Image (tube, rainbow, N blue to C red; front, top):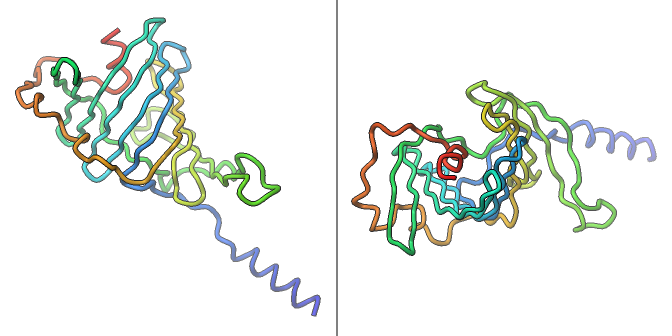
Length: 213
């Protein structure tokens, strides 16, 4: 009888699935903080993420080289456009967007570093099981390290290498699956007349702050 129990436990252990690369839910809302290795940029705020329409809306406050700022930005990757929105002044600036859309996911060629528990594993409900991964960025320009939940592949933390800022660290919190107000992922009506400057230098998410401050 004891041997049967031991064999059963062995089979269950051997057949237990190892964590696999995964894709986060296509619609997410939550909070985030962003810091850079060179300490030039520090940001916290809220985000809306739409992988289906390839759009990201950011409402943020931050610091760039010691100067504080606020920003409301819509990254519309299918249009390759960045909208800088000011609801109070009813103004909108449209600029070319340099970066390609990067879905929140762990790519198939990523390397699993470890599986850890955030909090405590002593009592059920006191800990959150996380999978930690590393790999190369899609354009092979550097490395990334990401942590996602075992259940649901919800992003918790990701860091990646850049030439301008060194390592960029993003922490996600208060994540909710879905978007309660999809209209926030469309340019406001007062943006209808915004014309993109064809001669403007394309910018990505972080160089936007460098240019504005």
